[in-house]
Structure formats: structure tokens, C-alpha cells
Length: 66
Image 1: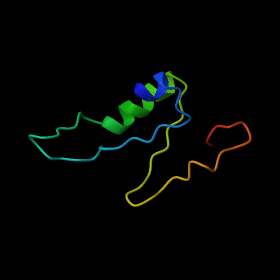
Image 2: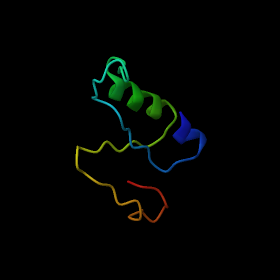
Image 3: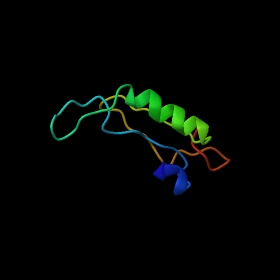
């Protein structure tokens, strides 16, 4: 997982819930698989709803996002 390798503070999955064959074909239960892989690496995941944003400057005192 690239975010883990790059020591990202949080991962925000994108491009899930899309159906645009033949250009993009999603694997079954992509978001759950992503979250499980991140949990195995002890990496924080923030899932945003469509139109929602994330303020990356709003970090906790530990320097990590909640």
C-alpha cells in the first residue's frame, strides 16, 4: 500500500464505487478490502462522502490525524 510506504498520516480512498467498464472495473467489496489492508498495516483511513472534504491542517497534537 503506497500510503504506508510513504508514511502517510492518513489514507483517503478514491475511485471506489465506480462502474465504468472497460476503463475501470472495481474488485468486489473494494472499500472493505482497502480498510482491512490498512488496518493490517496500522494505518489510519478516512472515508469521505461525495462532496465532503478533509482539512489536512487540522492535526492533533501528536501530529497525526484523528
